Length: 185
Image (cartoon, rainbow, N blue to C red; front, top):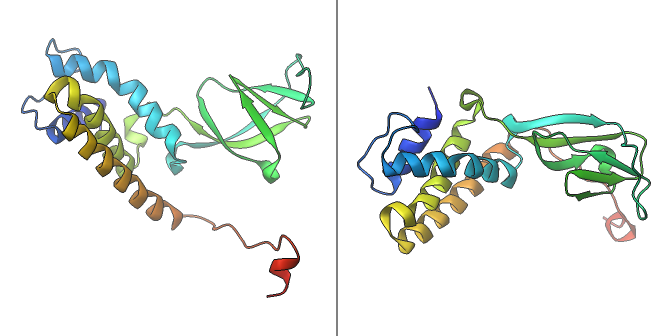
């Protein structure tokens, strides 16, 4: 079963660290760094791509404070929402801080949620997170910028493969004619 500790151990093995931690509360240097870097790295990897296990549908009511210009309404984002991925009907919007600005009475969107329960993680996400965490651990634990660069490349390549796999798991965007140029075909 996947756990925070197993993901950290996977990351440590990628940098060549032979220490296996039993808990992030261990007194060892690897455990301290894992405990410090894991939450932010997890959120960064979640936010970087719409992983299907982290997608949530939201419906927000407008806040009482309206934007001074540009859009007619402001909506406060839920704390667990890391990113607005796609608005309903591709409605134009702007994210500013913890608010979304839009011209709507209700703002509906698909967002990327912070998922802390590791048992819900997709296996490809686990590998991507371990690679990114290893990249973050490479300099403080292995003192190697070269290793960090290699892990960064491996992370980018792996996430591209995960995107390809994810694209095969849902409804594809339909082709919609957008103008005179497309209509001649």
